[in-house]
Image (cartoon, rainbow, N blue to C red):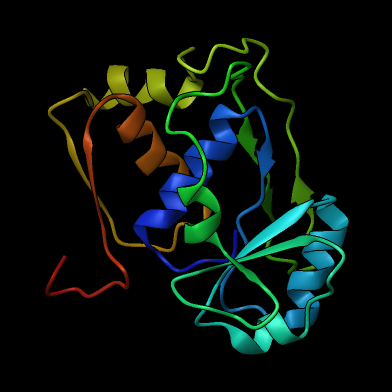
Length: 181
């Protein structure tokens, strides 16, 4: 996923998580060669890219499935059209997936941090972060969480998805604005 903070980010991340996949969140600030490196290094089978990044799109190979979100990119399939044809019922073989995030690359190229898929394949199985959120912070269905940072970073992604797992509400900022926050 190479997207700004949009509701579709969660749709796609949850779809991957519920399908037992590893999903990689890529910074929208990277260049095409940097995104290409992460695609190849991670073994990605497809990329979902924001239509606001046509320069990145132009520099990416066509050997992975390519989808655009929020507009069209020549030669790319529109994500919205692709999912419109899909059923809205859960897949028969749901299994818990997980994110695979990349380091910032301060000592060289970014490195993918790939952890094993959860041992418990149950998508409703408790996670360590979920247990911390409940036990330490008392988060639950009545919680409202402000997520002011880019979802391609670990903390905003994982904390906001944890709040959603607990039935709480996430208020996602497109961009940080101190007065709005």
